[in-house]
Image (cartoon, rainbow, N blue to C red; front, side, top):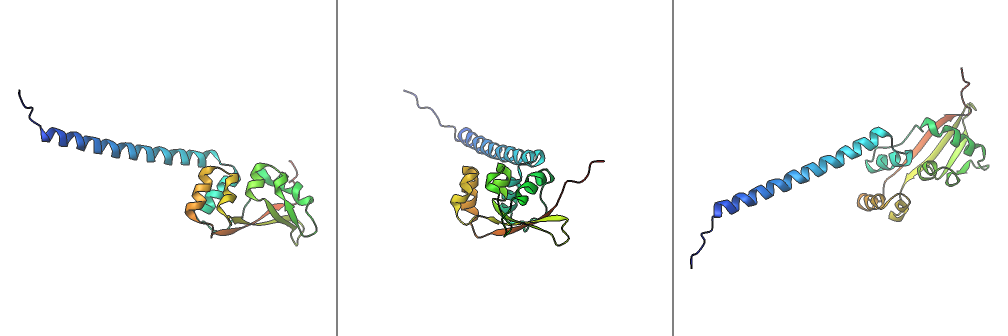
Length: 161
């Protein structure tokens, strides 16, 4: 009966290679996630997702509204009640998730609609309308951060030239 000699240096080298591979896999996976996130931003996320990332990064108040939402918001503003309250939940998902119920009033010059809303999460479950990852991120970041959406849009479409 012969005994095999253990080659400890070979075992240690194998462990070291496995450790290096784990680091490479982790770095590659993280890089891939960052690239996917950048692609989403470059391709233009829906406004409610842009607002969510704005909230997630704690970037302060929002003063502009995407131009492609103007026609739909104008229509909603024309249907506002006497207090200027608008129910955006009867609209597209982008407005429903982005603004929800909001205030819409004519500016003092009567040339613009003034849009105002408060964005944030009072409870973690409010993020469930998005995705499970949104709910998880809200749970991690907390619900103590809100910011104002204060934007203006022209009262009417500009004339076509």
